[in-house]
Amino acid sequence: MSKGRSLPSALKQLLQQPTFPARASRLSASTQLPAGRSANASPTPKLASVSQHFQSLQAEAKQKGIGWGEWVSIATATLFTLNNPGSLQALHRHAAGDKGTDLEHRTNVALLMRETGLKCIGFIGIPKVINNLAALRKAVEEDEELVKSLPTEPRRQIKSDRLDLVHKAAYSLWDDIYTPHSEKLLKILGTSHPDLPVFIVESEYGPLFSSPASFALPSEPESAKKEPSWDVNRLRTSLVAISALRAQGGVGPQVTSHVWGLLKAKDSIQPQDANKKGLEWLTTEEGALWVVRTVDGVSTIVPVSSRSSAQLTRNFIFFALADLRSRRGSRRV
Image 1: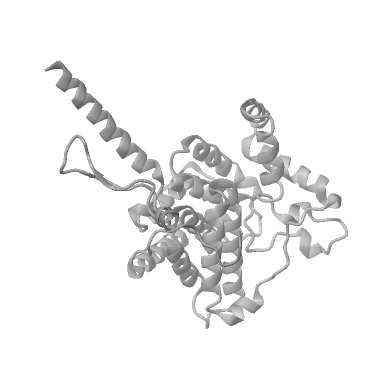
Image 2: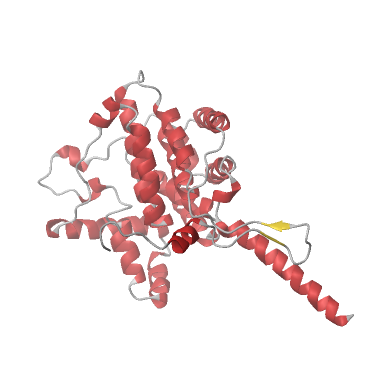
């Protein structure tokens, strides 16, 4: 494209419109069917209600012995999926606190949230992650001291000397989540496309979902071989998976798989973790139920227009079937 050139106005206007307009139902002229998905992220709901919800969630998590890292992981993944940058920024401000809060805590919150967002690529795709990570960065930039404290070196540049370690980490995580069905699942995925299981495991479960500490080189310092406290570890990865998949809707089997993955995450909990009991509770059926309900709760604060198209699809199918039955009935008369 040449410099200064822009798209034709008709095409630019179309790209800003929803995929289809709101329209009256054929069954009932008084019933208005909603428009399709918007071209833009959803508007931010009232910040007062958003903050109140985060306060309640934080208090509930604390009462259950769950640390901030877990409930923030759930809320972050949910808001990335619902594509609501304003609420995501509000979450960062709430979880990190003001500039008078300890810098280490503010840094850990920002790092956990951006790491959670990055892992969402494997569940919701790259475009939403790009846009919401940019929104998160804007919230971070309100705090100059925080900006200076964030590391800027990538942790996932995979070169030849690291390939075997990444490969090992990928299949180790896959097995840990899906055993005893891991091998069977790979074969099923391969029947859909021979490269599908290869890409999922070796490109996502390795360099993306696994902690970079799991494929650190022997020559690297000991600090690189340990998961930092803000990392999206094994248990948090299951929380992110459940949150992103549940929030987008329409992928029930995958949500179920990752709920089983959460139930198997107990062995990954460190004995010295201050929230050990709360984390162990999260890996129970009761804990998994709380996680799913928490995702649903966060989803209620986001405007309907930004939610998954699953509900719109269900509405469309309902009215389409009703319309079809109506027309069939009229033919019989």
